[in-house]
Length: 277
Image 1: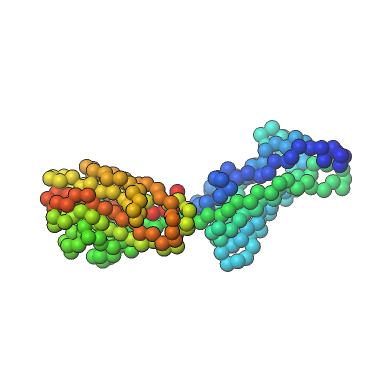
Image 2 (image 1 turned 90 degrees about the vertical axis):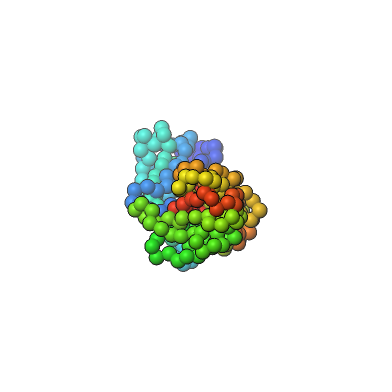
């Protein structure tokens, strides 16, 4: 293929990563098998046997540079001339990247047919790296009486008898007895620091009613003045979950009771989870 013919080719496709959303790649924990898939759509001059190269570069947490030579002069297969080119990169190779840094994918293919042909550089792909966020609270026999992974008692659990960690099946849970007639308001709250402004997080609560008599508990999940999960009757085992967008790097999340009575209104919390979707 002459230089004139090569220059006349339509714009070459850039690599794409299937797992990326809006040019953002959220890292996942390695499981030894899964990873990301890098795809390059069929280019007009694709032919079986054309050598291809894929290099990936990024920035590690310690400031060093990540350099991956994923493919080096591997020939295009007959199947790839029909379906397009693709390769996988295990998540294990991407651990330790700096949150907010960029991961760049550079793909090349030798398109010109001659002994001294040089590889043609395709448009590069740059993805923003996001470290997944997770703050999971469960309960154990060693827990204290007023602080559970930073979750603190609110006014709706002011009586020392209101909240108690107890054995619950094969594990432990936080039991709310609603001892007083002032059991409405904030049950638990936690201040979160180092949130990323503009990033979306989910806030979830695994809770169930117990005893099952008299007043039915009604709970909601709030973030400052924003309602994440509206008032919900807890008649059985339920998962309350909603999302919020951080408007500040430090925000307070709240679990709120909307029933004041101490007659009934009892429930069990088994898990509180705040994470990036």
